Amino acid sequence: MSNGMQPVAGNWRLRLVWLLLASLLLLVSGRLIQLHLFERDFLQRQGDVRTLRVETIPANRGMITDRHGEPLAISSPVTTLWANPRQLPDDLVVIRNLAQALGENPQLFVRRLQRFADREFMYLRRQVTPDIAESVLSQQIPGVYAMDEFRRYYPAGEVAAHLVGFTNVDERGQEGLELAWDHWLQASAGRKRVLKDLKGRTIRNLAVLQYPQPGQTLTLSLDMRLQYLAYRELKAVVDQHQAVSGSLILLDARTGEVLAMVNQPAFNPNNRSQLDLARLRNRALVDLFEPGSVIKPLSVAVALQSGQFTADQKIDTSPGVIRLAGQTIRDFRNYGQLTPGQIIAHSSNVGVARMILELPDEMLVNYYDALGFGRATGTGFPGEGSGVLPGGFGISRIKRATLSYGYGLSVTLGQLAQAYMVLADHGRLHPLSLLKVNDPITVQVFDPEVVREVLEMMERVVQPGGTGTRAAIPGYRVAGKTGTVHKLGSEGYRSGDYIATFAGIAPVSDPRLVAVVMIDSPKGQEYFGGEVAAPVFSRVVGHALRIMDVPPDAPLNNGRP
Image (cartoon, rainbow, N blue to C red; front, side):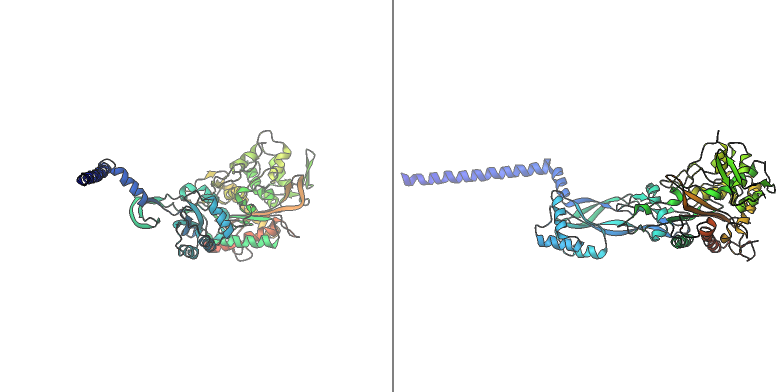
């Protein structure tokens, strides 16, 4: 009996095995059918996620150029190294070799990796040189990748740094025109779909989803030939006189375009590892100072414009002193009877004050306002100063008197240059422009005849007997005015500390250039505007006129007609 029952038991077990196998086959088949019919799209997406990626296509920031197309700021392609810390090998030797290739301290690098251990992305080093990128990538370390970026480069270095400014590592404007025109220069990155392997390496580019849009080019009014010239001369005089700082602006008298704008001390935007923040300031447009005697030609123009004075009228400056409200206004000496031209040539405080005191109370301030004092010039430069101009109604006589020779108000060098442009272009005020101008907008401030008379008076400043003879340019007629101002401290005006200035126009017969030079706290025996600032004007404007092929308008006798 037992032998007869064994086949039956064996058949039962065999059928059970087949039944289990059939059930398993049915389950597998059912699952396959479910995945194929109902979850196919989901699985396809999941597979693509693990093999397909959408990557950014970098785009270059817009270029900044001078008026002739010379690049001042460009974006160069560079390589950035990054890593997925989760994929990096747990091998201290490999990590140390990676740190060495990156030029980092191995211990500090390991600590940095530990801080990012739970993340999937970290920068190893931004915008590296090709040799560093090659030394890192050649090690073929899992989890180490490279991506393309752009790095901002400034070919002119510190020569145009205060005006152009700079960007951060992500090419976002931080200073200067890079900041002011960031929206114009900023690029729009593109996107592409790529196929990658299990190690994250790109196998193939599949499609461009969005094309990159580079930033737009910004063309400045600067002429780099003149910018280099102005930079060299300003730096030389600041070093020579051991001055705290200096600034220079050179303008096109016909359009209001800034052809050169330089400051000292400067900085190199290509190397900001040890940047001194005090050097970043564009002093020509940001810093305020009392203009002093350089404003006297404008005050005389107001007096002539009023009709109460004429160019040949005599003004009594005796005895060389005025007492107003307990304060004393004095000249260098008693000049006696002076014409308006002689008042400018001798820089008589008493003479210009007596002229202005004969005018209606608010007239001088109203004209100063029309000349642009007390408000920004409109260049759009970040942080541009607006200056301080007292109100015109109820202003005291002593205040009007001191305003007439440049004390009691504060201006920027840009505002002063803009005001002098009125004297250079038939009494018309131009907006100051850092960009090329095709159709300049002007506002008539003075009558052309008044301006012509004042220009002729200002020529005497540069001729023998004037205070600005060192501003003369051989072959050209020059009109200008010197200024030497006591610096204002916390306890009043500081003795022995001056700001030396010179503002001028050339050539007088057909003005093409306006330049203003300011030297802050020159040291030594020479500190007057005619001694320190005027020679810089002569060299810069003289060379500029020749570079621009402006024909001479005077015999070669020290620039005098």
